[in-house]
Image (tube, rainbow over all chains, first blue to last red; front, side, top):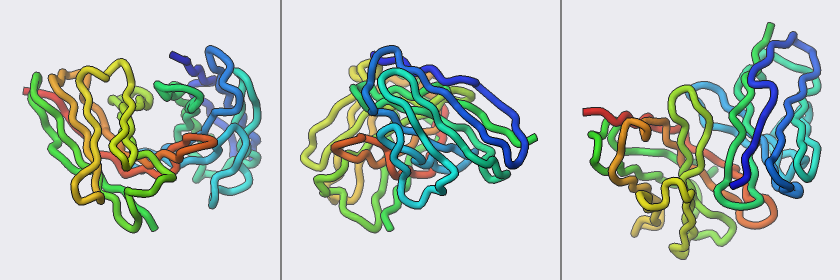
Length: 107
Length: 121
């Protein structure tokens, strides 16, 4: 199985800050990496697919990069509505494992 | 637009079978563009993919659950289901159904709101 490790597990940042979350795969997954936003009590939402492609309807302040084993999700200007948990997920091979999540809070 | 909605018992006794249904509205479950899957989140923990089914009935499962899981398409073709046998307290979780894109990214692009299932006597 491919293990996914996210860092940090949580962060607190101010409105307007640039925020970066890192995801590392235990082996190369090419660009088969997806990012999700999950707010409490809501359905998770796909933000980025194939490492860097923005899902339709998602604001351009979200961006993704990376390939192989190291990936990043960046929020260019943090807003209060971005307070959520963020998960990476590899879709290179089954089982489709997720990272443990990063909780983003607003200071 | 397409929407997914989970339904089923919120409480299941240990050793019994957990059964959930996902209703698909606003679209066809028979599309060749998608698999239909289940993902769960135990309290305070991360997301775990359980398994997925194609409209043809082809399935694939997480090996950690494979011996206990069945995901199937409903006869109405507007629902798909999850069966998890011999449940224990560790199966307590919010269960989500989701649409999985076939092809270049295999991402889960649409999710249901989730349903909480507690395993307890």
